[in-house]
Length: 432
Ligand SMILES: Nc1ncnc2c1ncn2[C@@H]1O[C@H](COP(=O)(O)OP(=O)(O)O)[C@@H](O)[C@H]1O
Ligand SMILES: [Mg+2]
Image (cartoon, rainbow, N blue to C red):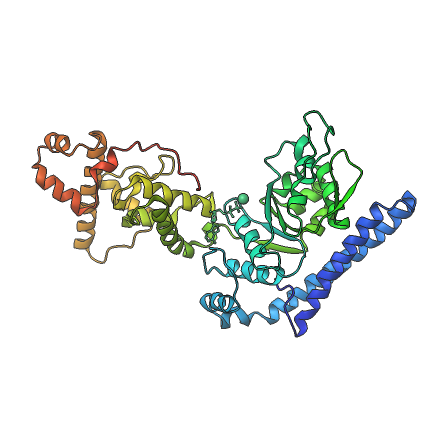
């Protein structure tokens, strides 16, 4: 998707987005018109809707043609070059990592959208970086030193959402003991991030539409209109287009919010980024926990490379914080939360597990034997330590082994007996 590119034939995309924006304003104005009668409003609305759909179609067609024409562009520029180009243009990444083409595209759109005041809609699964992207947009725009106010529309009870967004007048409802300003007023001159916008109940959607149109709010229980200049970035993990077809999300609001639409890919579609993110979060966790970064065993690394990450980057980050907290120098599968940890592998299962977790296949039979034997040894030691709660002397006694030999084996595998003394079902570390 190319929006707002400068120069050349692409420039006409600017006017399409601008036109759609204008038609939306016209439609909203019509809807609330007090001077026209209902049938007249409905007739004009219908015409405006047809016009909007035609412009949308034209704009899609044009973008399609442009995309086809620009097909060679990504081939000419490697992801690294695209990232470097952004850096050269002083783009602020706000800690956004990754060279996945879809992520770079999202960043390039953010770069062009940031200096404008156009609303941006970001969609993607939970944990894909929607809030981070909203901050990127804020940071790269002219409002960067003004407030960035985040509101989670899904976390506020329906009856309080309007007061939360627009504020209230004293006595507006039971419990409203004082005048209170809402998030929109707090975000005045800055950016408001409306997270989980799909959760906003219909009455709130109507009010939001009016704010978008008139740039003013009314506190609940007050007639006074207060002007607000707020840039809106909304996020959702829902399919708003489908919701508007089903009548649970206002179509006009959807179009108003999604003048610029950015989609963030789930982590499982950008596995190539995992190694980079692991390294980044290991350093970050080490800093936060005041320790040295953990080393990951090859099999933990393999696990991370193939795991589905339903919670996306947030889950990866939490996992790295967790293992950094629980492990000694080296983190292993045992440090993963119980519910995602692969079952402990016996010597026979090991080979199968290696295949499942995508470990590189050994080059020769003897290498395969040695790898299997190493795995068996490690699994044996870990299981043993788990059974004896991390007491090496006890394990040595039980397997009738020399204690210093056992210590040597533990060292060879980077296993720390003290890791088996911690409470492994500890809660996942919360984001600091
Ligand atoms: N591309 C990325 N690079 C680095 N960290 C990221 C990236 N995307 C997300 N994160 C981190 O993952 C966590 C979840 O991101 P967030 O923006 O809250 O996701 P969402 O709003 O989509 O649920 C945050 O700690 C964020 O900093
Ligand atoms: Mg979020």
